[in-house]
Image (tube, rainbow, N blue to C red; front, side, top):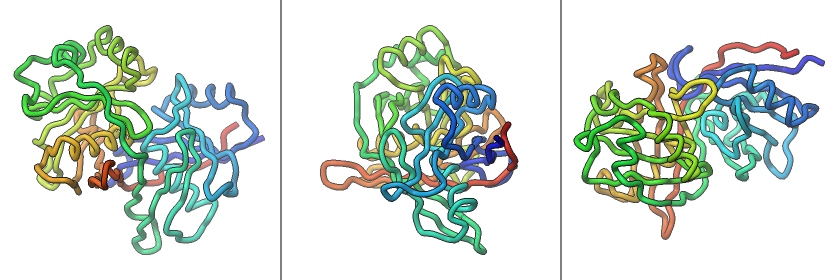
Length: 294
């Protein structure tokens, strides 16, 4: 039976920028079938909307990479919420809630001329893990000590998925980084991190705040992601925790994917609230194609 199929660009300010996502509407596929479809699409993630109607206030959604299922990922959350609003709800709403493996994630909508503008997800409260020794970051990315920002440590952070956050001194250092498979894969396996998000305060475009890259060892499709919403949520929490900009809150734009010609813009808001940090990640979703699968 044909399955409704959609393709969108997420964290994109124009078509064929940002991070591409495939979305299918089905409740009839097995786990193995969903995994096989995700492998065939070859996108970094593919999402499956299991029901056309909400349950417990949210829509049941599962996220698969070509290799495994993920409890949470950023651009699949925003892109799938967009498709739910446009094709299931079919009218403007303030919030769409997704029921993911990690729990319920709300996505807030703004509208421009009746169409969705910026979408914002509130991620889970962050958890901070171990500080990563500089030599392990250097070995993983082929960097020198002079490339690392000595003011701040590399650290594991999670808002639903673990990432290693690594501050560098310049855009040249960020551009220089490459996946050195054996040491980075070992780091990911030992820490549970999905990859390394490296960043610096020297963006390509004056309107942006930070330049970032997401690098992954062992991914089936690519070792670099054009836009990583889950990792940027971890980055937002990291920036507040370490007072990177000197205060207790941020409202910034992060560019990612410029080195691989998929320019992406992720908007980050975060603020300390008591003993925790509230993290929001925003961006735009651009529809690309729709049809049927199978």
